[in-house]
Amino acid sequence: MGKYVIRRLLWMVLVLFVVAFVTFCLMHLVPGGPWDRDKALPQTVVDNLNRKYGLDQPFLIQFKNYIFNAVRGDLGVSYIYQDRSVTSIIMGGFPVSATLGLVAFLIAILVGVPLGIAAAIKQNSFVDYFAVIFATIFASMPNFVLGILLMIIFSVTLHWFPTSGWGSIRQIIMPAFALAALPAAYMARISRASMLDVTRQDYIRTARAKGLTERVVLVRHILRNAMIPVITIAGPELAGLVTGSFIVESLFSVPGIGRLFVQSVSQRDYGLIMGTVLFYAFAIAIINLVVDILYGMIDPRIRYD
Image 1 (cartoon, rainbow, N blue to C red):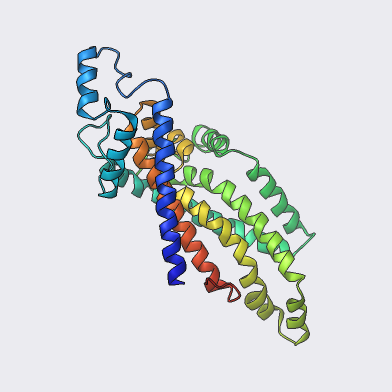
Image 2: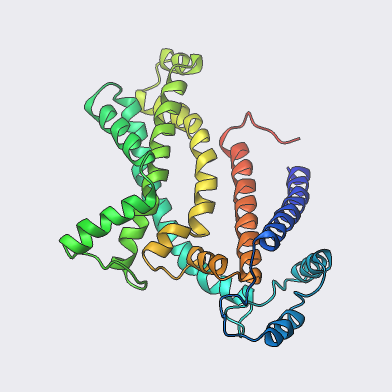
């Protein structure tokens, strides 16, 4: 296991380098620059700003300097918030995105997994049909469409929740449900399909033939093996939710990383773009590694040599 983790960490370094290089290339290929948002700036001021931040240097020199600084933990400064470093901005928005993402993830787990399990146990019943309809509707509905519908129903019509802001439980509920709907639908579908597949396996028939109660068969044999595909999709979903949602955070004016990233792209804030992209890549890589390790803990047949 130790060698496997070390090997994955080394691959993670390569992945982060490739992500950084591709992002750096795309930023410089897009027309415009970080100072174009202020048309009143004289050309001499723009030249001085480019010289100050090293934007007048060749592309490869800029990339080399950025990588060397990033390895030391310095992600640079923001061109929008020039008095703050990119690291401090990300660390300021991450708790908000993490809180919203964890709430949405818990909703998705508590709704999707039990619904999929119940649908598999009660196959071809009302519960099964309801689970299939639920998963189909919310798997095909974009979260920003659901967010707008929630606003119309619960804010404009019923006046139950505010449409924007952050800080209270009432301001978390709607964006959390808008984020949780799609993962909940996926988990319901995967849980149902995995449960039905495991139920038909020979070792399940053997366990029942040995006289084990249905409860023991369900908990000890079916659920444990059926949860492996669920964990497979739960890991990346958790990474995506915790690191922020671009559209939902912007829609509900949540001051998280996703909203910061949208603002950085629209204003050509190279430092903040690079910092948030690398943060996303690092978080997803780490959570995927944790998920792979959990495989071996849940299923003893899986070994990492």
